[in-house]
Image (cartoon, rainbow, N blue to C red; front, side, top):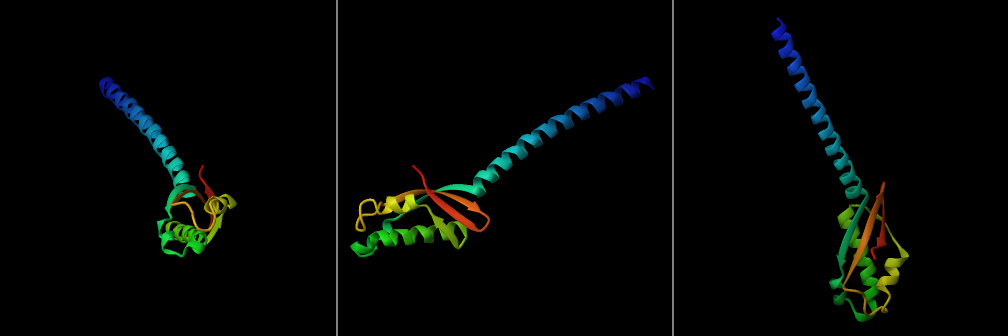
Length: 121
């Protein structure tokens, strides 16, 4: 009978150690998942190509670029409420209405239904 109890306690301790190891792994995994979800859903960086701006008349290109940025963000964030930072506008209009940049990097934060976009420097 003593052997049975010893085997049982050995099994219990090994099971306990296995459960403890498994629990710590779950904590690490869940912690990584939480971080990934927070970064993935709340904040993203997009490189928005603006080469379609060249199809517009020269004097409308920067206006078209702003419209393309909004359209791109609407498609990729699936939200209709987009707020662009003034630095994005300044970057697009930096060289005037005829020569907007060919691409722009934007950091996007999602707050409920509102999407806020900032320029990445």
